[in-house]
Image 1 (cartoon, rainbow, N blue to C red):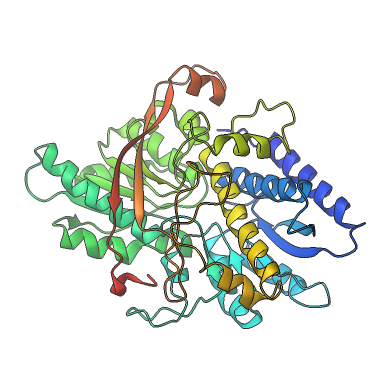
Image 2: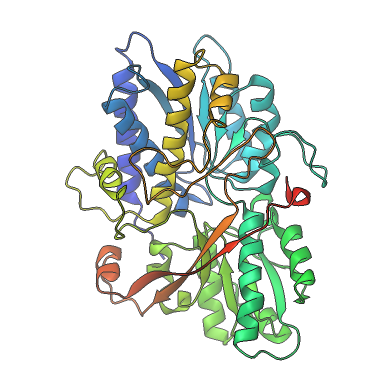
Length: 431
């Protein structure tokens, strides 16, 4: 299978180069580190997300930067390798040009960097939604470590799974299912897919599911026929796909082939328009959480700004941007507004930027109304949102058309089915 990411990779590095070139002549700039997965195991979704971040930062610089001072953005492909991310972070966090904030990516490296960014007081905005990153004080009931400088935009992996399991319990009743529905957690033995495993299995038991042994499959595409036969023989009814789209697609296709009739629930990185095209009809019916209020073809006041931002790497304005691109833009703009506030209230120190994240309630970055979902962070709780918007993929067999064309003709639809307001329980903080 192939993903339409080559041009995005080129554009990402091009826009990063523009940023770096522009700061060479700046008298005073704001150093920002940007870790991206361009070539590793999660690059299928890492590329569009990083492109959204990069385009947003380039756009902000084109409009004067942060209160008249441009950002010096250093974008680095770390190949989804935590040791490389740690090494790069150490370079960024030392010397006279120490970064004031970090745009990050994966769970393993983000969690590994948590103690570093806390000690160095460098706010880190990542693409990891691990519940372990939501407890700023370390006082959570499950022994979570303090993560005072970690932020992300969207519900945590754990809350997203809790929301989908709540929906699944009702879905089972509506379908007239008899007996207990059977639930299984699936994914690689890796911090990212494992992050919500215990939370999901605990709630599944409370909701009346039979919890089956977890089924492992690698983060990379492969032949997962054996895993699908396991699901079929066990009679699994609901399965959580904890990996990114590339390997999830392999599972969906294998399970379609062997006739394993399972309601799959993808994690936030497990499904998007590109994955729907690659999986074809095998992705039809998959449910998953989404972090933005609309898709690229949706109507919202903030879509005008979103499409202007997209032109930073697509001047013609013809590219179709998947949901992960849009989430990257939202993430970058939350950081931008925090930098704006901090620069006016004592300067761009880590503690001031962190304090800025607590200044607003139900916060949507200016200009992105109706796109980014209102979020609230406090100094005791970094769960920015607990409302889980659940979407279903509706996919017809691929005709060979582009993603843009498939969306326009209705062959691919991402349709919202419900919102589950997950309780903000104190005992769920940090896991």
